[in-house]
Image (tube, rainbow, N blue to C red; front, side, top):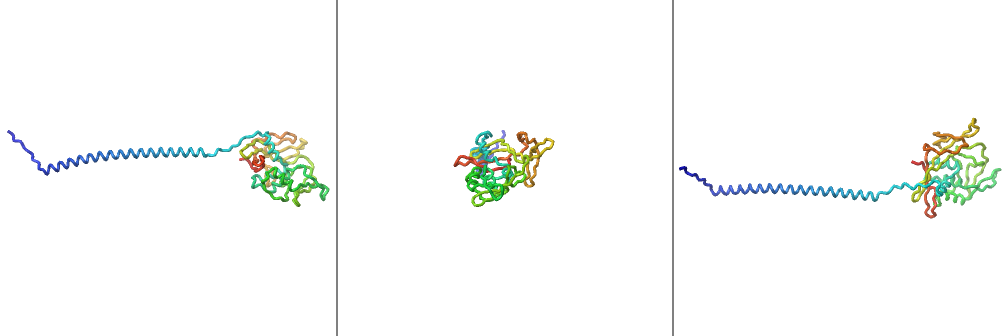
Length: 305
């Protein structure tokens, strides 16, 4: 009969085994806890990240909304019929004789603060019809107006708030567009609160060069009106074979050299002026509203962009 073997374990060994077993259990539990904690932090991080993205998106949406609310609406103006009474009234204000009109185009661009003093005087003088005439020292009369008449004429064109200096000035500063009206003078003299010019007899003959404008459109804004015109600088030439003059229409005029540039067409002087094509330049007269009386006054001129 086989003898049974008994394994004897000392108390110290048993205690060590129990401790080792407990340590293994603790390590397993610690690993499980660490893993669970890591997942929890990851989820929180993802939630936080998603929340930040959502907040940023919402913030961007709000900011965009603010931008859309505060963004100014572009003021494009309301188009007026060029036959409306207000447009007719304003075009009458700029219906200057060719020598005064040439002075405007020579300046080229101005507003209510940059308009030259002598241009204001020229426009005021040109707008006065039937100036009183008196006999001067020569056989021909002088044209004379008072300082007050000049002031009223300038105010009718540019408004009562415009400031200028009373002074003598040259009537024609672009000889090509001298014009022909029977009698002319070269300089308007200012003295003793009056403007006067010594006249002399003009030459005879056919039509002289002039500047032709055609109103193409008008735009009205809250406090201003713009008048758009196509402009032709027109030279004249006598054609012997036709026994008549013809008008030669140019796009540009060089005021430094007094020469016409870029011929576009020509017509007989007896023909009706044709509709100016898009090849001609467009210029803009600007009129500002005077809220004190409801009238509009010339405040600027420039070539359209």
